[in-house]
Length: 262
Image: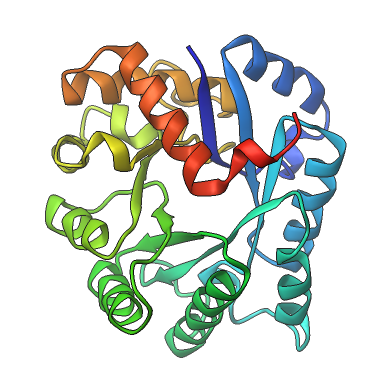
């Protein structure tokens, strides 16, 4: 079986000492691609450098909503430049967050709009972060879809309800699930996952965060995406092999991964 981890933060200091071993374990677990994600200019630059150095990696560049208030003048212009790099397969992560009080909401909305416009301009999908801001994100996506057509992208580490998932799907989005899906208390997330069509599902780790059961409490890493995939297959009532094949095909299609060298 082949898997793709569509969201990891491999520039994190927790990977400095053993990244080659982490990537070797990912390959041994069946992963043929990992997307490493930027949350600001520095981490976006790091994501590109990692993708240049390790063929199994692809990069995503952007300014995450909690970092919108910290961005210096000119940072987004650099993101625009990076978005054209051949190892960059998406724009983000962007979106909205009302849980953490780290950035003015107006600044988050401004950067969200910029990322959506950039994704359209460069023909690459958008990776969306949403925490306690589901209604706000859906409103932005509906306006974007009404103005420009279906939005190519993914709701990453989805933790909303089935109605939110359905609204995002109607706007053209894919929905990705991380290790939270496996937690005992995550019945609502599993219920949302059960309603997502197989051809719109993705899996991710959000490494080094959100390690799935049975790795919960440890540093997460891309190889652990298999555990989330196994749980998701059970939720949907399909075989693990079918789930792996579908999510891998979805990721390859959405992010244009077939065009990247391995």
